[in-house]
Length: 276
Image (cartoon, rainbow, N blue to C red; front, side, top):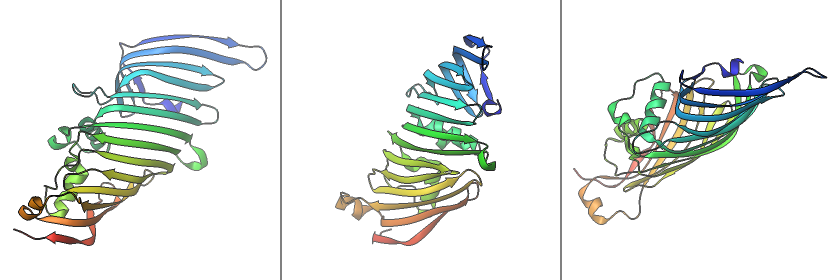
């Protein structure tokens, strides 16, 4: 099936299969099996140490990942599990994905390569990990669309320095500084709306700034529309205010084709204090 084109397993994989074929009445093929592979790939997504149970019945393929790793490092195990089914006749399916302690640096590097660029050292060296859960409903080739996706996802980043992420570094450049404290925790709610991804809510902690964001990304025309706001935390000490310049609040946006979009300020800085 063309929906599964690009799926590859290592030559060292162990694949088992058993089944039956019924000729009486409506002929049907029923198969089940297991794949154990040190490396597997679907399009650009590569996983290691993978074990999957699968079945084919009534032209419906189903699978359940027993174990698998994605963006694994020595510090973060990068567990990625998914269960799903796909109806080959109706060209539709469902998928539930759960990721735990996926390396933030490895994931950012993967997304950078997916966008057609090589990640720089700062991106590769990002610290922290990502936890994520996602449930999706998929339609393939309906109404002339390559694919139509609906569903919800939650994402959290921990033990990170979020200001060092590629998009945040370019925002820091716009704001005129690379030192806005540290953001180590990020939480986000996302929704798949057919032909685009909606960021409903993103919130962070922070030693100087806390950020919030909303936005959308359309995969049909590869465009992004994101709005980010930052506010100085109320618990900042007087000493921090006296000895470094501090922006009380800012509002910025990232709009346009993903490869060309640049941050722009939506409102002038409100300065709590000025110093050289």
